[in-house]
Length: 112
Length: 110
Image 1: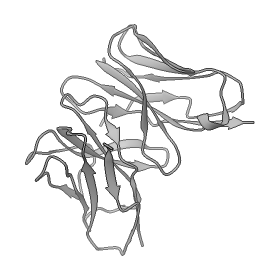
Image 2: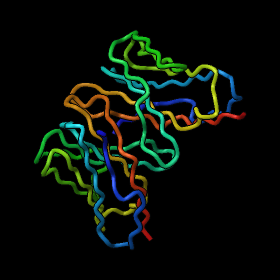
Image 3: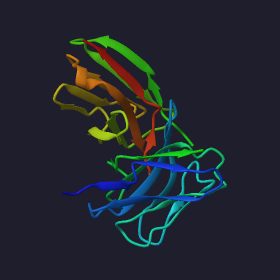
Image 4: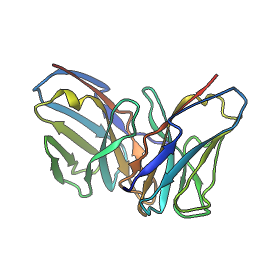
Protein backbone atom coordinates (compact mmCIF):
# COMPACT_ATOMS: atom_id res chain seq x y z
CA UNK A 1 0.00 0.00 0.00
CA UNK A 2 1.88 3.06 -1.28
CA UNK A 3 2.03 6.31 0.61
CA UNK A 4 3.91 8.77 2.75
CA UNK A 5 4.50 8.03 6.40
CA UNK A 6 5.36 10.69 8.93
CA UNK A 7 6.33 9.86 12.46
CA UNK A 8 5.61 10.50 15.18
CA UNK A 9 2.10 11.96 14.98
CA UNK A 10 2.67 14.08 18.11
CA UNK A 11 6.00 15.25 19.49
CA UNK A 12 6.82 17.21 22.59
CA UNK A 13 10.23 18.73 23.23
CA UNK A 14 11.80 21.12 25.65
CA UNK A 15 12.93 24.49 24.43
CA UNK A 16 16.54 24.46 23.23
CA UNK A 17 16.54 20.83 22.09
CA UNK A 18 16.96 19.72 18.51
CA UNK A 19 14.32 17.32 17.23
CA UNK A 20 14.11 15.24 14.06
CA UNK A 21 10.87 14.49 12.22
CA UNK A 22 10.73 11.42 10.03
CA UNK A 23 9.26 11.20 6.53
CA UNK A 24 9.32 8.03 4.40
CA UNK A 25 7.64 7.40 1.04
CA UNK A 26 7.26 4.24 -1.03
CA UNK A 27 5.75 5.94 -4.08
CA UNK A 28 9.08 6.01 -5.92
CA UNK A 29 8.78 9.79 -6.13
CA UNK A 30 11.86 11.83 -6.93
CA UNK A 31 10.86 15.06 -5.18
CA UNK A 32 10.12 15.52 -1.49
CA UNK A 33 9.07 18.57 0.51
CA UNK A 34 8.62 19.87 4.03
CA UNK A 35 5.91 22.41 4.83
CA UNK A 36 5.03 24.16 8.03
CA UNK A 37 1.40 24.97 8.84
CA UNK A 38 0.30 27.55 11.40
CA UNK A 39 -3.32 28.56 11.99
CA UNK A 40 -4.48 30.97 9.29
CA UNK A 41 -1.12 30.88 7.52
CA UNK A 42 -1.60 28.15 4.99
CA UNK A 43 1.35 25.95 4.04
CA UNK A 44 4.81 27.47 3.93
CA UNK A 45 7.72 25.67 2.28
CA UNK A 46 10.71 24.88 4.49
CA UNK A 47 12.97 22.70 2.29
CA UNK A 48 12.61 20.61 -0.82
CA UNK A 49 14.64 18.01 -2.65
CA UNK A 50 14.47 16.90 -6.26
CA UNK A 51 17.05 14.14 -6.10
CA UNK A 52 19.11 12.20 -3.61
CA UNK A 53 21.94 14.16 -1.97
CA UNK A 54 20.53 17.49 -3.12
CA UNK A 55 18.07 19.89 -1.50
CA UNK A 56 17.12 23.56 -1.60
CA UNK A 57 15.86 26.07 0.93
CA UNK A 58 12.26 27.12 0.79
CA UNK A 59 10.70 30.32 2.09
CA UNK A 60 11.26 29.68 5.81
CA UNK A 61 14.41 27.50 6.06
CA UNK A 62 16.04 29.34 8.95
CA UNK A 63 16.35 27.13 12.02
CA UNK A 64 15.75 23.91 10.09
CA UNK A 65 18.00 21.34 8.41
CA UNK A 66 17.37 18.33 6.17
CA UNK A 67 19.17 15.45 4.52
CA UNK A 68 18.35 13.26 1.52
CA UNK A 69 20.60 10.23 1.68
CA UNK A 70 17.97 7.87 0.27
CA UNK A 71 15.22 8.43 -2.28
CA UNK A 72 12.60 7.19 0.18
CA UNK A 73 13.58 9.34 3.16
CA UNK A 74 13.68 13.08 3.86
CA UNK A 75 14.06 13.77 7.59
CA UNK A 76 13.65 17.29 8.96
CA UNK A 77 15.58 18.55 12.00
CA UNK A 78 14.13 21.45 13.92
CA UNK A 79 17.09 23.06 15.62
CA UNK A 80 17.29 25.20 18.72
CA UNK A 81 17.84 28.17 16.39
CA UNK A 82 14.20 28.01 15.26
CA UNK A 83 12.57 30.71 17.34
CA UNK A 84 8.99 29.49 17.18
CA UNK A 85 9.04 25.75 16.42
CA UNK A 86 5.58 24.81 17.68
CA UNK A 87 3.57 24.01 14.54
CA UNK A 88 2.07 21.28 12.36
CA UNK A 89 4.69 19.89 9.96
CA UNK A 90 3.73 18.26 6.69
CA UNK A 91 5.89 16.18 4.40
CA UNK A 92 4.97 15.66 0.76
CA UNK A 93 6.34 14.00 -2.34
CA UNK A 94 5.80 14.17 -6.07
CA UNK A 95 7.15 12.84 -9.31
CA UNK A 96 9.61 15.10 -11.08
CA UNK A 97 8.20 18.44 -12.16
CA UNK A 98 6.87 19.64 -8.80
CA UNK A 99 3.21 18.94 -9.61
CA UNK A 100 0.58 16.93 -7.73
CA UNK A 101 2.24 16.68 -4.36
CA UNK A 102 0.91 13.96 -2.05
CA UNK A 103 1.03 14.58 1.68
CA UNK A 104 1.69 12.56 4.78
CA UNK A 105 -0.54 12.82 7.83
CA UNK A 106 1.64 15.40 9.55
CA UNK A 107 3.53 15.73 12.82
CA UNK A 108 2.35 18.15 15.45
CA UNK A 109 5.38 19.49 17.30
CA UNK A 110 4.93 21.25 20.60
CA UNK A 111 7.89 22.88 22.29
CA UNK A 112 7.51 23.70 25.96
CA UNK B 1 7.65 33.87 -0.60
CA UNK B 2 4.58 34.33 -2.71
CA UNK B 3 1.26 33.00 -1.55
CA UNK B 4 -1.94 32.89 -3.47
CA UNK B 5 -4.94 35.04 -2.51
CA UNK B 6 -7.68 32.66 -1.54
CA UNK B 7 -11.20 33.73 -0.62
CA UNK B 8 -13.33 33.59 1.32
CA UNK B 9 -11.30 32.88 4.42
CA UNK B 10 -14.20 30.98 5.97
CA UNK B 11 -17.75 29.97 5.11
CA UNK B 12 -20.74 28.79 7.12
CA UNK B 13 -23.41 27.19 4.97
CA UNK B 14 -26.53 25.10 5.33
CA UNK B 15 -26.46 21.48 4.25
CA UNK B 16 -27.61 21.23 0.65
CA UNK B 17 -26.31 24.63 -0.41
CA UNK B 18 -23.75 25.14 -3.14
CA UNK B 19 -20.31 26.55 -2.30
CA UNK B 20 -17.90 28.61 -4.34
CA UNK B 21 -14.35 29.64 -3.50
CA UNK B 22 -11.55 31.10 -5.56
CA UNK B 23 -7.87 31.75 -5.76
CA UNK B 24 -6.08 34.59 -7.52
CA UNK B 25 -2.52 35.59 -8.19
CA UNK B 26 -0.62 38.42 -9.81
CA UNK B 27 1.51 35.80 -11.58
CA UNK B 28 0.73 33.28 -14.28
CA UNK B 29 0.64 29.64 -13.22
CA UNK B 30 1.00 26.49 -15.32
CA UNK B 31 -0.91 24.23 -12.96
CA UNK B 32 -3.66 24.74 -10.40
CA UNK B 33 -4.49 22.18 -7.75
CA UNK B 34 -7.20 22.00 -5.10
CA UNK B 35 -6.71 20.14 -1.82
CA UNK B 36 -8.93 19.39 1.18
CA UNK B 37 -7.60 19.06 4.70
CA UNK B 38 -9.51 17.56 7.60
CA UNK B 39 -8.54 18.31 11.22
CA UNK B 40 -5.23 16.78 12.23
CA UNK B 41 -4.59 15.27 8.81
CA UNK B 42 -2.54 16.08 5.74
CA UNK B 43 -4.15 17.70 2.68
CA UNK B 44 -5.67 15.38 0.11
CA UNK B 45 -5.63 16.22 -3.58
CA UNK B 46 -9.12 16.80 -5.01
CA UNK B 47 -8.63 18.16 -8.51
CA UNK B 48 -5.67 19.03 -10.74
CA UNK B 49 -5.91 21.50 -13.65
CA UNK B 50 -3.26 21.79 -16.35
CA UNK B 51 -4.66 23.96 -19.11
CA UNK B 52 -6.07 27.48 -19.23
CA UNK B 53 -9.86 27.34 -19.44
CA UNK B 54 -9.96 23.71 -18.31
CA UNK B 55 -13.07 22.72 -16.37
CA UNK B 56 -12.85 19.49 -14.39
CA UNK B 57 -15.32 17.70 -12.15
CA UNK B 58 -14.86 15.14 -9.41
CA UNK B 59 -18.28 14.09 -8.15
CA UNK B 60 -19.95 17.15 -6.62
CA UNK B 61 -16.77 19.19 -7.04
CA UNK B 62 -16.01 21.31 -10.09
CA UNK B 63 -12.89 23.39 -10.62
CA UNK B 64 -11.76 25.67 -13.40
CA UNK B 65 -8.38 26.98 -14.52
CA UNK B 66 -8.87 30.66 -15.38
CA UNK B 67 -8.27 31.81 -18.92
CA UNK B 68 -5.75 34.40 -17.78
CA UNK B 69 -3.90 31.62 -15.91
CA UNK B 70 -3.93 33.85 -12.84
CA UNK B 71 -6.94 32.39 -11.10
CA UNK B 72 -8.95 29.28 -10.36
CA UNK B 73 -12.21 28.50 -8.63
CA UNK B 74 -13.71 25.49 -6.88
CA UNK B 75 -17.44 24.81 -6.60
CA UNK B 76 -19.08 22.24 -4.37
CA UNK B 77 -22.68 21.41 -5.13
CA UNK B 78 -25.31 20.21 -2.63
CA UNK B 79 -22.99 20.33 0.37
CA UNK B 80 -23.08 17.59 3.00
CA UNK B 81 -21.62 17.47 6.53
CA UNK B 82 -18.54 15.53 5.43
CA UNK B 83 -17.52 18.46 3.21
CA UNK B 84 -16.33 20.22 6.37
CA UNK B 85 -12.64 21.04 6.29
CA UNK B 86 -10.09 23.49 4.94
CA UNK B 87 -9.77 23.78 1.18
CA UNK B 88 -6.45 24.92 -0.26
CA UNK B 89 -5.59 26.05 -3.72
CA UNK B 90 -2.05 25.55 -4.99
CA UNK B 91 -0.31 26.82 -8.08
CA UNK B 92 2.83 25.83 -9.88
CA UNK B 93 4.91 27.79 -12.40
CA UNK B 94 8.19 27.25 -14.08
CA UNK B 95 10.58 24.92 -12.29
CA UNK B 96 9.46 25.73 -8.77
CA UNK B 97 7.52 23.91 -6.04
CA UNK B 98 3.84 24.48 -5.40
CA UNK B 99 2.67 27.74 -3.83
CA UNK B 100 -0.36 27.50 -1.55
CA UNK B 101 -3.19 29.79 -0.61
CA UNK B 102 -4.08 30.32 3.05
CA UNK B 103 -7.16 28.16 2.78
CA UNK B 104 -10.94 28.44 2.99
CA UNK B 105 -12.44 26.92 6.13
CA UNK B 106 -15.83 25.39 5.33
CA UNK B 107 -18.42 24.66 7.99
CA UNK B 108 -21.67 22.91 7.09
CA UNK B 109 -24.72 23.31 9.32
CA UNK B 110 -27.04 20.32 9.21
